[in-house]
Length: 636
Image (cartoon, rainbow, N blue to C red):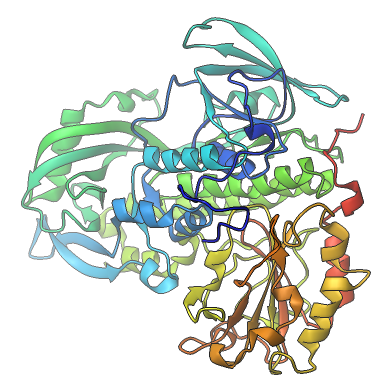
């Protein structure tokens, strides 16, 4: 963590100085805002935390509840989400309090006595093999708390406006604030009062029954799978030996997905309640908790649970739905989106794959940096059209995966051709649930794979898969990607050719061009009154060991002077090895390569060091000239 470069910090360095709209933030919602977020779920809270890094953008978040969420329904945290937490600065703290999934065990009928269950296999969790981040279980309410803290501690000082209900909206064809939003206070001194707020953009993260979705005429397409599950968070005494290990139990009496919770005692159980009759009319949702517990004991036989407390319980019918579009732009129109949908407002599915909260957070991450860059004047409004274009296919992939997974979870033992089929599926498909399979298609912010062979381990369109390097200034081993924070900046990683620092090289020529060349995006798109790394965070990784890299000979580009005192930033120069050689582990060209990474950690481009024209052309389509870096005004 870097601080002190803007003056000595004696307090918590994660609390950034208030700036812009974060200074003297009004207690009440202004009549006009840049972004109005509806709903304080995972997508909405992450979006707020991201936009808090853009203090020149007026952002408010409204939530109908009177206060913070106390008990969340979601609890599974996939490795990609933990990677995202790291970018927002709280991964270590949430890991410390969460349950870490190390194994998943599978249980089935005892061949000698099918009424009993026996353990059929032990499987290491996929997180152990897929990257450096764990697979966690923690209450959704705590995730929201951490994002709320990040939003409150960012320069924009964003706080949720609780007790405010969204009533509806109208998108006008012109005006600086074209979205007219009707709200009502439902708690506090102003309870019952209605008013209108105007916004440049609205982001609806208000759940499966989204009023924002209804207001823009979008449709939730799909159907229920006619299968019901009871779910409960319980503390128990039990003789079931795997109570503190994630388990899939496939018995003659039904199925259970068993997930230990944080804290060492609490566990969540998804209990199969069977097929739902066509004329049930959702009566299954009224199944009493006593019946759910009895069903769990029937499935667990010869083991049993003695439930001491039910912290939360529910009954749901599996549904798979995706909204027809994630913004308000009519088909065939090329106008700028004004309203966006995130999370359950645009995709719903079963809870058993642990995807709802995770995919929702990536919706917010994808949208947040785009809104921030557009409203700060760094990027054109056309950037916002990429949100729906990128996230809707991901949601459809999620629905397709969850339909297969939930179907497998509901099967009876005799329907499996191989008793290991469920365990094999869990391991074989691990890239998808972990969050690492997403790959965005070429667009204005994702380049073509013309030079992909130069960096095989950094596929264009996929998230930047970090690897260990050595920080030259102090010899510390660091994960290269962990230095990237959710601050809205682009990352440009220059992997050097074989020449040593100070020698004539392609890298040296590239660094000179980026620092002072007329077509350099660093020169064109960095505000004259901002730090040199205000928009682009540029780092170099040499092939030599760190003790062979002479910092005095490194191009000045990689040791910039920042902040009001012009202090040297020593943490942009890295080396491969000793230990892991990133050039080998990520199959990087020894002739050098440039890897461009988006603010949401996805690889945007891979280019040779010599391809300066291509690098300039790419950012020309994404960024606005620094001379025009002023707040965006919606065109009339």
